[in-house]
Length: 180
Image 1 (cartoon, rainbow, N blue to C red):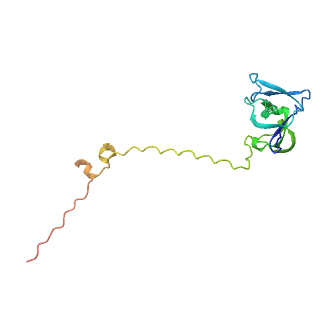
Image 2 (cartoon, rainbow, N blue to C red):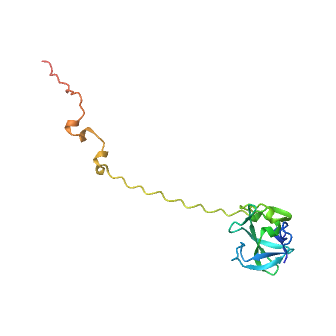
Image 3 (cartoon, rainbow, N blue to C red):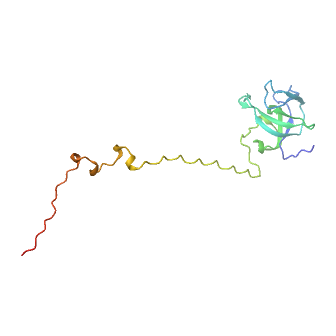
């Protein structure tokens, strides 16, 4: 199987801080819980495994404050499994998984992964705008005559006679009769 070097490649290298490790457990899914099946034990020195996916440890297992990452890799015989980042080195273009482009193999646990992978050269599809909710219906206004009396405007013709505003009384002008 020919591996494209521009892709992210994984090498089972063991943990440089624990030289006695000679194999790495390859699991059926990400995570080191006892319920996750071990598919095989890959010997240290296994190389050129294409990385298919990277996930953060599902329960947040960490060493010295750094949460483990799990690499989904494919073996030459077609077996696909997950290996923890403290047991591997990676090289190649890791930008689609949140890692830098690595010209040489680097200890994966020593790298910082961005949880927002760098965009690839292909433009990402534009997500559809969420639908705009319809405005809440406005209850119809009742005609003026149906409003309660305390809401009616107070005008003189609505007031009882004893509450009418007082105005000076004006007499209409008197007409003069023509002089004879």
